[in-house]
Length: 95
Image (tube, rainbow, N blue to C red; front, side, top):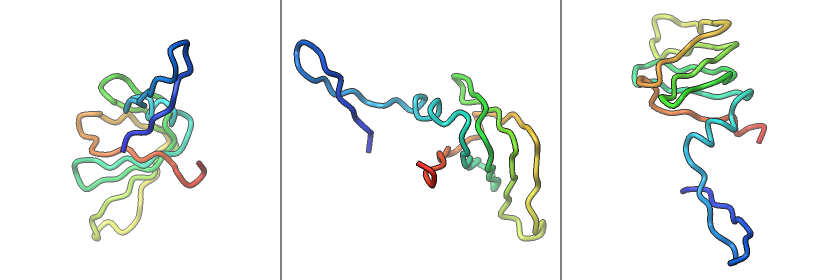
């Protein structure tokens, strides 16, 4: 399920794959949904990330599956440890 594009050259077209960090890089400044290995989920704007996929998000909504808490928590800015990230979902609604 990798996205491919072609690069025109003198020897014809060469298929080029999109790497995972490129997808994250294209999401900087856009809304993302982050699923953690725990029961937490974060929705916010991706500000930056590093090679370990540690991420800085702003205007974050913290969503938990725990029914006892009932309401979502809002955080202005946060740093997520990439070791605990299970999935990153770019905002595909506006794409």
